[in-house]
Image (cartoon, rainbow, N blue to C red; front, side, top):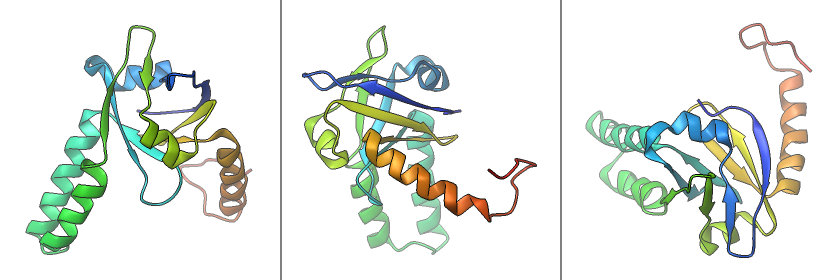
Length: 150
């Protein structure tokens, strides 16, 4: 499970460290899958299990009629076709391709945000702005499993 939030430097070659807890969640694959989000200027990612789940869900939704073949192909192009498998070295570093860095506005640092079965990668200042907005959104929301409102 991808938990927590951490910010890591990006060097001149585009290398950054995947948080150790994220690497533990991925297991033996020694790689993450990351793609540009279709919902904004950030990246989304996960392990092989998430990619398999996305592909399976698209297929299942075509089979049950809730997604047309054309819509399925569009999602495959945007989610699977844009994803990159990034292997990491023994210290947990990956090279973020320039196209991914450009999409998210990543220059000197990347903030990794765990979301359970997946994660997001944000430009740190953009994440802080988003986090403040999210904090306001949850203030009036119903409690989740006994979690106390901020």
